[in-house]
Image 1 (spheres, one colour):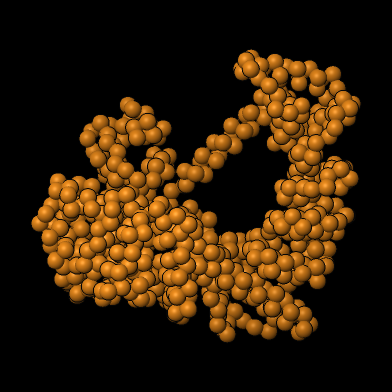
Image 2: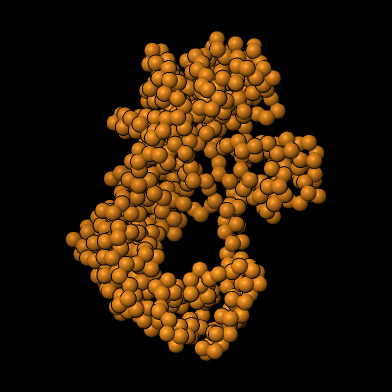
Length: 595
């Protein structure tokens, strides 16, 4: 752990920076427990993700968004015991790592070619550079053996494409031809990518012609490069043949369709653009932001012809409805263009604003109430069946539990009453590092049962009944007296048990846990995955703190964060570009209201 922490700050800085972290720890809300780090000053902190620690140190302004305490009234109900949700404002460390990798890649490219400008190299010069490169590899690795006879040429073309240097690329291809070596599709694909980047039309057409003549099967990266390149030329319609190859290989992506759709719009072929948009829908693909922007710009809302205007409105609203079904959030640029599209509607007046929605689901711009976040009965039943078959039992039940333990638990749940709340005991107990886990769990159970009057089920593990230094006998006795308890084997996963108990009790039962259950969501089908997200956002109580005899949970949004519409309004959530975790939803909305 210390080695991992040393990548963030040097050993000499740990003592001083531990004080900085100690002051920030009360401001940060962490979603998961990753471990306990001990600094030289004996400060023990619970850090959820290393990226958050890194972002604290790399944030030059020293600012960090945080969640502040929210105190409760004595008679607070379930809807009042939450904490407003916020998102981190610091830059994602993953982005910084990617940038660092990009810098390494560019340095590697310059080192490989040792050139500073785009120029033509003769065959002799290429031979000299190739010999020198092989010698350097052999010096670094004594037993160096080229993986392919084209290894140097592939590295060279990759480096040239990264600059990009089109003249150098053409000289490399000429060198390969002079050597009477068979050309490889990998090299041509890299050259095609570079020519597309440089908009070298002659190079694009040469690469495309070579691929068509010499390559029967192509990977989707090569097909994407070919379509992108062709759409810059007068032969843009030839992209259809490459898309057909992708369809035969079942590797059509929105990235492959994007340049062809944009080219169709730019050349006035609206029927082809609509056909390609329908291809997205039929293949379950989400149009890229570039495709969406071009569709909005092409199918205008101020056409004079009423039939054309009606058709254009149908195209754009169908796109929005599809994004709603996929729970996809457009970018801020797309949202701005949609706002302009609404404002320019023929014979209509629309008021457009960028706003936020309160946690109770009320638009702060037009004061309208948004659709509540809820799961239908059919969705819930289908989700429950799929979770039981894929998550609880799965392909190998012994990875999570044993058949005997699962059967005993199912009989325990089926024979008992329905519960208001199911508690992941070990997850809640580990909320505070400096406090006894047993006392923390006891506080939550007492609050939910005594003060709020809920019937609770506590799920734990056998070691909680034996580790008296952490789970005192008195605390566990109180917990078992106030709530029903089930303790699994120490090696068993408790999440499947929690899901089964929660769903068995019905649609109104909630569960208390900080676990995001990402591993279990990944096992579900796309339809069940979306249903699980909706169910999770309404039924999960994520504990944050326990102060002055009151449990504090993160506040769940009352409204559904999807594109919503009525006869006279549209509310569109969009991604404003601020860093957020994958499980967080955007908080910025486009509000368009018809006067």
